[in-house]
Amino acid sequence: MSHTPIREILTDAIRYWERMRIVYNLVLVLIVLAHLFAGWPQSEGRLVPELAQSLFLLAVLANVAYCAAYPVDIFARLSDLHAVWLRYRWILFAIGMLFAGIISNFFARSLVS
Image 1 (cartoon, rainbow, N blue to C red):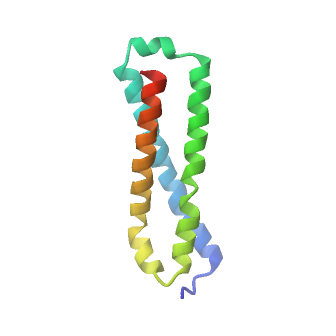
Image 2: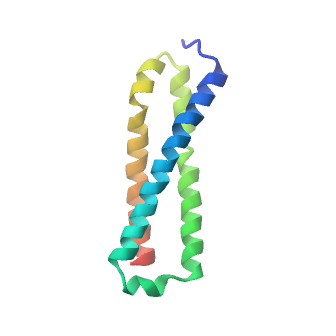
């Protein structure tokens, strides 16, 4: 069993996942912008306040979903497999990023294209 204090585990989780949240959000923004520019000039007519509200809501929901990584990370860090987890937790990020990217692609296509 890990003898790492819970405070250190929580601090490490925040440090890792919040740094990766920047990458996560940038990728999702790039997906939406790609759809916006790919559909230009037709997508210009969709640039209305309601679109901004929808995109804001989806961004908040994407970031709430991102928080699902925290309990998985903390649970794994408290297990006897914590050393292995630290080497491979990027896989959780990659799977979550792929999932969020697919969902963003789907919504961006319907909202801005």
